[in-house]
Image 1 (cartoon, rainbow, N blue to C red):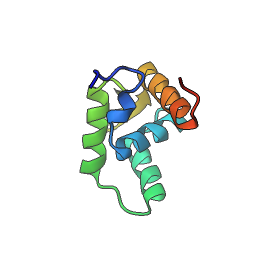
Image 2 (cartoon, helix red, strand yellow):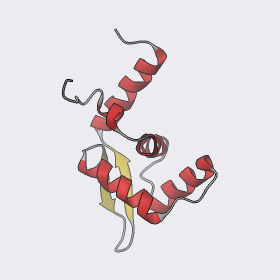
Image 3 (cartoon, one colour):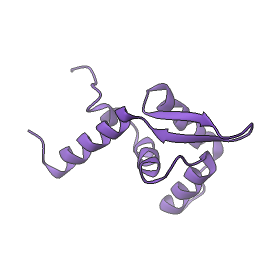
Image 4 (cartoon, one colour):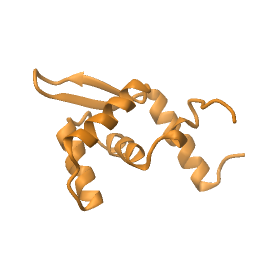
Length: 99
């Protein structure tokens, strides 16, 4: 098995983590609560703080998400260039547009 590259790093994520990336891709630096509400609407169930923030932290640690303080209590999140590239490559793979 080959090492995960930036272009296929999304393949190693959970579906929930990929959904977080999709929420961040369509939003402009949302705070965590906005991400949670969007995911809860999509899943049709409550998303717990611990589930969301544990996964956000893993995405930050992996270099796919940037976290910046909005104020003393709130952070905002954004995709990194690495994440944008990885999502674009995954979309191409899903569409069958890769070699």
